[in-house]
Image 1 (cartoon, protein in one colour):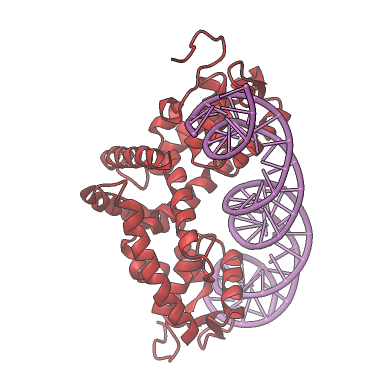
Image 2: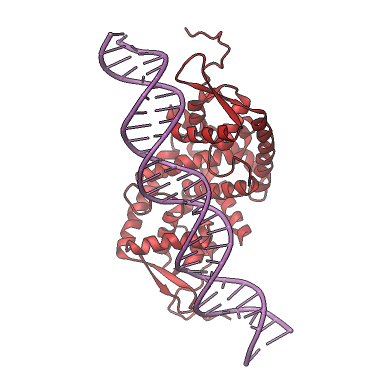
Length: 165
Length: 165
DNA sequence: CGAAAATAGTTGTATTTATCCACCATTTTC
DNA sequence: GAAAATGGTGGATAAATACAACTATTTTCG
């Protein structure tokens, strides 16, 4: 039996703590969940060139699926600025995953193209991402709620993207 | 009228791009949304000691609401490791927002206590967080969906927390 | 009782990220 | 043809994240 007469705070457990206004704040949950999903994903991607940070996976997939896509478009999709995306592409290019070529239409712009090595990596990463989404969320969100969640977030994302433009 | 006969990829817009498997991947939306919410929040918190990174806001609120709460409990709530939380607390203490005192019950542990300055900051931040949650999400997620979303994420968070333990 | 294991917290380090800003070239606008 | 907008690069800075090692206590349990 534990002594509870101390003046000191009793051993408060994490699950007993009141979260203050965060209890009903969407951003809190989004942010915490994000760091967990991202960390989990990173461990699964360990050693591959797309681990860590946001935007690498998306960039790789989009270049794979949209030959000639431009850097600025990738930045828009990921909702980041051009210089951040440029660095990711530098990284990809130096590892032989993509090539860049000045656009026929606009000499300022350059299109991104996947290499065989990049395509192989994309395939591998695709499998990992799909698998992680299932194994990470299945234990913590029931199937039907996952569907609801996906719909809500998808719409939110598109509205956000429109607003940015 | 634009010339579409070029061999090059046409000017693909961000909203036209297919997201590959990410289209139906929860983690993609969570991650993108997170970076936007976090950036938005940071700009609103500019100059205050809790800007940037995750866990500062939560820590401040919890210490404010739970005098004597321990560092490791805070780490559990935010789902981070102890050293990361320790650094945040160092930062807070050096700025006079909290004090730490060795626990009566356990000489290894120390309780965190808010100072007047810390409490004032917490009040200010509370207002900002509540306000941002509304103005950020209202334009991109309808009210009733926000309620659904909150419920789903809240339950997911608690399941995740249990799983960690 | 006393050794071993678990827990609380700190520290160090290395790797990256993220952000901001200025800059150059090209294209579009008017 | 000048001015403004756009696409992309590069630098500098600040910060966060993650890991692992280490000390000091406390708990476990043979």
